[in-house]
Amino acid sequence: MTKEDKLVQLKEKLAIAEAKLVKVMREQGEACGDACDWHDNNAYDLAMSLTNTYQVFVDDLKKEIWDLQKSK
Image 1 (tube, rainbow, N blue to C red):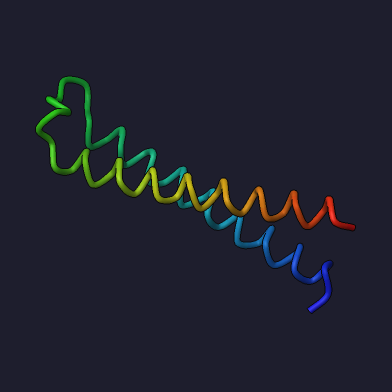
Image 2 (cartoon, rainbow, N blue to C red):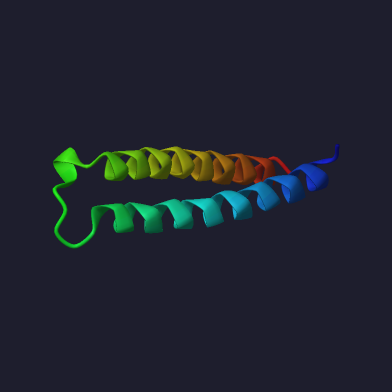
């Protein structure tokens, strides 16, 4: 696989991961609501966990893309 192919593949994965991140962030907001007790809210905790997971994934993909572009 060439660097160009790898870059295209990473950008496609990034677009999907960013879309999923937006979705779970929306779910996090819905789980919290206007007046929730977020200290004792299992739905919020789950949404936060997914948000954190996708944020790390997005950050890692961005770094990998940046490193690949830098190495050209």
